[in-house]
Length: 218
Ligand SMILES: [Zn+2]
Image 1 (cartoon, helix red, strand yellow):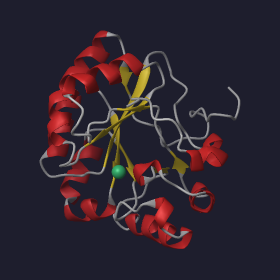
Image 2 (cartoon, protein in one colour; image 1 turned 60 degrees about the vertical axis):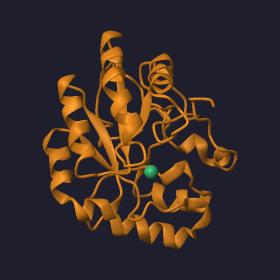
Image 3 (cartoon, rainbow, N blue to C red; image 1 turned 180 degrees about the horizontal axis):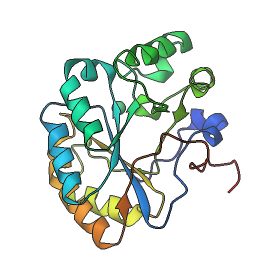
Image 4 (cartoon, rainbow, N blue to C red; image 1 turned 180 degrees about the vertical axis):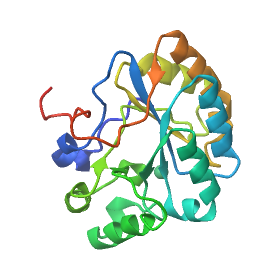
């Protein structure tokens, strides 16, 4: 399995309008965590990040945010950013653009943010057109694969560390499915990336000038 997730074929026509990596300032990288908040796993992630003074962006599922608003507050109070990941972790390719948009807006009843990441990275052209008027759509350049139970923690650590460059957007998951690999891999990933001089920052909310969008020039 390639640890670098290339754009799915159906995304190609719109991929130049999605954010895959970010113009770095020095050695900045951008850790992201999808599918939370979770009442135990997310606070554990926050503690690990704090040890390295690392900041991250959490793409939250609306129904989880509704269940655990105190965890959302913990994330924000610790100086991290949050993004919309739909209300029910909706699969874009099997959902109409209207339903997808409604589900994403339902998430806004829990919190608002200008950042959005499509679950599974799957979004159709018409969904993208609707959402891009309201959100900056953030993909990734390094996929940890933490949710994949066939991958060992060592493979995840090496894959992330070897593929990270300044500006990388790296995906982990604060979810039950990924918990075992996440807890085994994240502390070592943070150690090794710190040792290489990388500093994880939040994906900025003021996105117009700070994001490099592939295909739109340098
Ligand atoms: Zn997800």
